[in-house]
Length: 241
Image (tube, rainbow, N blue to C red; front, side, top):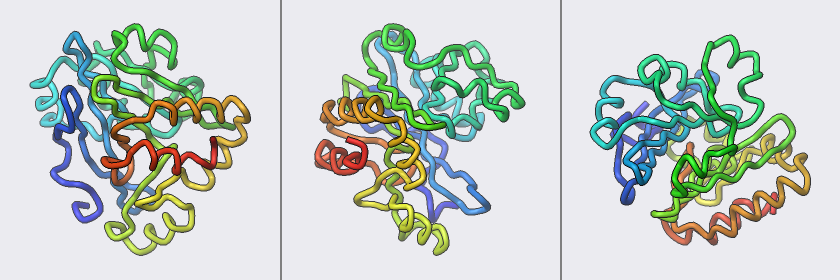
């Protein structure tokens, strides 16, 4: 899977003070796909794991060298499946999720415990270091997190920015068809349709995200925006704003 992902895998890699990413891989319909967890260290030293990727003992050990794993976040209605394994090994942590996720049949069947819906009191609990903006569509929700100290925005599927040269041909063609390819990635067309059905509230939320003018945008899938991030984000979310 190394050719489609961003090795080294399953270990934290620093991007800025109190900010790391953990690149990993995921199988979707039998095809490999790059996937990424973002790790934020809060002012009290606690770690927040955004969109946890596959669990390994080595990953946990490496993270615990950075701080205590205290908050795990399921930031949209699709990115939660690896949290069950993390919960087995870090049961004392607090598990956050977008509204409605806990009621989904697959989540209920999995036995995953979800402690709080986002945003709730998250910003206060996270000591003002992380802003949470919820975007709701039809049957889909995503919580965008903005890490104030590094001015980094963390998204899941609101923007997908995969590099076609790293993907198998069928998946590369599919990514082109749904409009989610670097360097001008967007949400896949089916997700755009669902978010747009969120109406004016979804549009306002997207505008608030763009207004943050981040210095960096991190995605769960594909190449991050490390340069001209604010302008590129505005373009990538223009379909909703």
